[in-house]
Structures are given as C-alpha cells and as structure tokens.
Image (cartoon, rainbow, N blue to C red):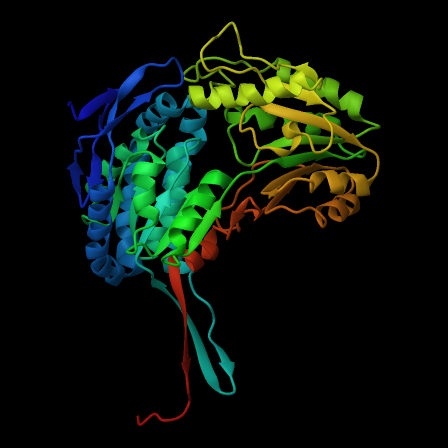
Length: 488
C-alpha cells in the first residue's frame, strides 16, 4: 500500500515509527475526518511483534539517553520545540482535519502549548528539579530523581498532540525513553511529530510510535515486562483493563480519567460572568474532560441566569472547524456521536425537560450535535452521573450550601469544579468541601504547568505537572550520608 498521505499540504507517513525507522505491517485501519467523513488514509497497525520491537528499541536506547544528563537532553528538546513552533500552522490543520477541533484554537493555543510542554519540562529538569538536603542526627539526606526506564504513553483523541506532549515532555526530560500509542481515531499528528524528533536529533529508539486499536496494540504494550511506567489518559473502563494487564508486572500507573464536573453559581454570583463561564463548557463540542457539565445554580437566581446563559449560547456558531469564525465543530467519530445521542434520547424519554438543543444539527448533518441543556433532571439520573463527553449539560437548582455540596460531590468522579461567587468567604467555605483535583473560582481553564493536575475518586490516579510529573517518571532516591568514616 502507499505509505504516505497528504493532509493540509503535509506529507504524513502511515507506518509505525520504531528505532528511528518506519515499520510497515500487513494489518491496517482506516482514518476518516470527522468534519465531513473524508477518507484520510489507512494506517499500519502494530501488533505484538512491532510492540516488542519498539520496547526493545527503547530499552537499548535508554542507557545512553539517561546518561546524557538534563542539560544535553534539554538542548535536543528545545530544538524539538523550535521545530514544533516552526510548524504550528501545519500541525494545527493536521489536527483539525483529524479530530475536528477548531483550527483557530489549534493555531492560537493548542499547538503553542505543545511546544511549551516540551520546553517547560526540559527547563524544569535543569533548573528546578531539586530538593534541599536536610539532616537527620547529623546525617545528610540527598534527594535525586533517576531515569526509570521505558515508559508507555497511551493518549486520547480530544487534544492528541497537546496531551501526548504533556507526557512526552517530562518523560524525555527525566531521561526515560518512550513508546507512544496515540488514539486510533487520531493518529496523524503523532506521526508528523515523530519526523520532527528525527530532525531535532533525538537518538533512534528514544521516541517510538505504535499505531492501532487497544486490543491489538495497546494490550501487548501495557502488559510488556520491559515497561517501567504506564501513563494513560482516557476512560474509566479502559483504565481498568490497563490496570489488570499491568498488575502482573506491578508496573506503576498514572491515570487521568473521566469527569462529570460541576459549575456552581452561588446566589451572590456575578451572573454575567457565570453565563460567560457556562458557555465555555461547550468548548471542543463538549469533548473536554475538565468541562463543567453539571450546572448547579441557586434557586433565587436560576431563572435570570438561565436567560443570560441562553443568550450566550444563541451567539455560538456551529460549523466547519476550519472556518476561523466557527465556535463549535463536530463530534469525533460516528460511534461517539451515537453514544451522545443515546444519552440525550434516553433523558428525553424519561421526560426530562430540554431547554435548548437536544438533537443533532439537521442543517449541518454529519457528526454535528446541537449544544444541549437539560433542566432539573432527577438527582442520580444517568444524564447527571455519567460522563457523556459531548455538548450536553444539565442544570439543577439548590437552596442551601449543604444541598449544594451533596449534589456537587454526588458522582463517582472528582476531576474539576468551577465556582462563581461574589463573596470570598462564601467561596472558600464551598471549595473547601468539594472533591476535585482542580477548582476554578470565577474563572475556567486557567492552567499552570507547574501546578498539580489530576483527579480524585475515579477521575484518576496520581498527579502531573512540575515536580509531580518527575515523581512519576523518575525513580526518586534518597542518599543518606554519614559524617563518620571519611579518611580525607
């Protein structure tokens, strides 16, 4: 078969990337654009043979990469970031064609963040990855972070390259070598990125990409005894499969999983601000793990807030994500589209009131689903407790803070929360009781790469960001030195 496809003026290699070379297989899977269903190409699917080769290549490359040290690794990683920045518009269009997210977001924020991920962790390893020595009965404790080995990175389709480099950056900066399995629905940007690693001078075997479905490619990867760490972003059911596979080797895991986060509007909130933050939850067609999909609003201001929210939603333009004026694009895949529609249809069948949306966008056809809001669904109902991962929100009212806290914490997730309040003391009182890894107060999606990121409950295991990332990707070591016994 032809090994190359043209997307957005860029040439993409559809083969796996192992030990610095492209590897074809006899098995392929099709890739289509969610924008209009255009067939983009057939990608070579890695099986157990290719996965084993990738792990062995990474293991062979590990000693030299680990010994290189943070400064030299940092030089190469900065070259890689430079190449990302030189190709931002190309990467942006590739990603938009592959996953249907907004081109303007990729150009302005997402692809610059890809370069930032790489630079940030390269610099952190050089300048900030240290702990002051401390004494115990005259003995000196000296903390260090040693490279751990080969890491398996399994990444999602909603922000493919940004979320991949959120893992690749610290893993490579820590001195580990990488085998990346991107989501099978969005393989394009990872393949293009692999070519950039070659141009940057990253040694062969340090970074590898294996493509394919979870059961074919992912399973031999996460069960491989040569893997030292597994980092996965995705769904809870898949995480359970990975955890079981990794258990035989006791491979350490880092999981960033689902969310069903609340956006809370207190009675003392600025309702214009609340409406602005609420409409942001439809970003990326609702395919954002951090989205506040459960709007919890005080009953005294619920009607006024709903009207302001409605007015904001009415300004959203849904359409082709390549158009820079578009606000909401399509869902990622027909399977996912039907999943979203199933949630909505069941909720409507239960008699839950739809304030707006509630159906596919018939004018656009394809995979476009209208921004949707359900009003006052019963506590504990499926539409309230299950992660839908689409442009579907619910709005419920509360009377007291006690009722609010019970509702906010009333799911199996604990990834994030957003709170809108005009009173600092009141805001502090509520946030102190919320179960969430990240809480935004009077803002949304403000992220600092040095801050801990992760979820509570079934929203994940562990934290990423700053030193927390290195705590996972490295072996943290304490060397205790006695003041006694020295001859010099």
